[in-house]
Length: 165
Image (cartoon, rainbow, N blue to C red; front, side, top):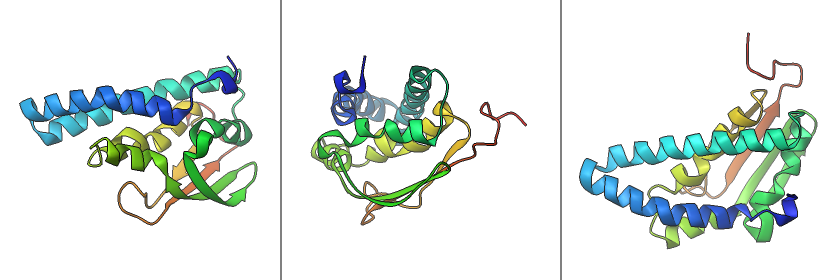
């Protein structure tokens, strides 16, 4: 299936959030907010790792910064993210997100308190599942009240793909 035939990530996240909202509310009522947040965080992390592995497999395991960048269209489709590119090379990809419809959507759904767990935490976790040589440094997100999200991806093309010493 081509990327053009794949559902935009914003729509996938809307569907997932609609289900996870009920799980979160149920767990929060029965076990408290911290347990509910941890369960959501752990579940979303596992989902991100699985999705990243599938995307790495889709490029035949020949992952690189460019194959990673090529997949970004799924997250930005339909204007889901407004970005300002800072740097793009074989080893570095830096940009700021100045508008995030994911954050807007979670707030509209009443999920603002866990929106960072539903989307933002996925970004670094995705790197782990896609290629261990890819890392993300981010100091702030719109979801948690900042004016913009600062993404700084680095790719160690000489490192071990499996993250082994």
